[in-house]
Length: 546
Image 1 (tube, rainbow, N blue to C red):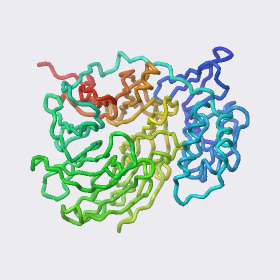
Image 2 (image 1 turned 135 degrees about the vertical axis):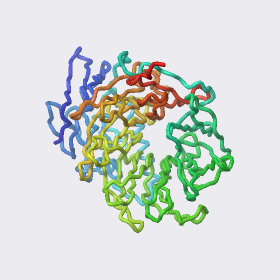
Image 3 (image 1 turned 30 degrees about the horizontal axis):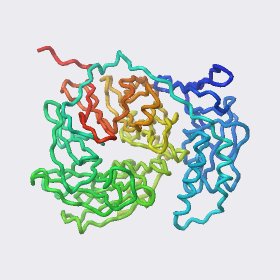
Image 4 (image 1 turned 180 degrees about the horizontal axis):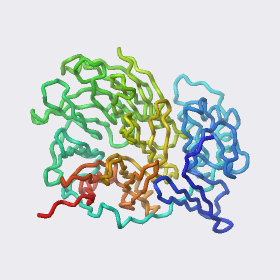
């Protein structure tokens, strides 16, 4: 068994029919979950992390039921549950429900939800190809989950905005035409920011005043979600690479694409690749060390489509001749940053695979187009909700770590108590060591930077939740920055609550005063308009007097 240190699990009995579960995270933020009346006695202990198998363990007086895993040592059991009695799945249920992914933990949905969840799982199996298993009946699977699941999911208690935060000024960009800004990204020039509207296909550029204005709205592009700059033809001028989902809502189709926009040719839009599934990310890098940029494409897809691609650059800009190679046939890739992870001089690929896989995978570049897969992190729960990664030397020890956010809340109407931010520490072996930083409902993006100017790296996170969830729960933090206090300790500062409509964020010195401000995107589900981003101005270093 492995435990995360410096975590206190507390249970205060309020009445005979309701109780509260509290977790004091490394961030110093008390996350208390209130259990509604008439719930069963199953307790969720979201801050315990242990390696589990099919056995039941008695830990701190709480029974922990583990899922069925082929290789428990490769998974980080950051999602654990305490269940009532000795409810364990039969071997047939365990094998069927845990064959393609980690065994779903009973506590992740309320008891009343499991019949629909099981039915959906059976539908997935029916359309799966080349999969022949000993199939239990739906009623048998439902019976297990209903016997082990809690009656209700613990409810988060509201948080208050910290008045003493160094981010005292909240400035909204004054452009009022944006709808659903999916991301904000550094530009080709210092201090420049770009953003894309996933609904209207508008691409925005920041001005010196901080205001965002429309740069281009390419008619060819349907639903841009990610922007990047790259000089693919080696003419000394970077072009804008656009990841196009091809639909606003998730679907299985082949309408995804990668586009190149040329700012010197009136933003001429050229397809790099079309006719693929939903593209969530594209990253340029010289993978074969031949002097030109290749592309790694994250085809998120949905249920039946999606894969991880490399487009090999033959040395010219005729994209029809670029060689396509499937590096991983699995769907669900969200982020694919490139970094020389092992220091051998070759760029490696790090991919966040979501959907049922819920893992961070390194594809170590061995040259000659060969990649070796290594698992950096794997959750023990298919509804873990991975939402983004950031590659950074977080502990400043000379290697690359991973900051992982898991807050995808669009598969249910619940706020999951295990959503949050983790630092995956590179200790020279795989998997990396996972450290819990904070629990945050719906966290969608986390970025690292020295926010308080003390020489170490801090974190800033934003959340994105469905409107139904925001209406149901009040006081949920929507922006938090986490102050790195050293020795694996973090102090969380809640900057905003009840506004979980931020799909992404970036740290940028907006007012050019020498410290990092937070730029949070605004994502709207309805066809309404408003400011594309919200700025939180860092007052750690005040501008000099005039």
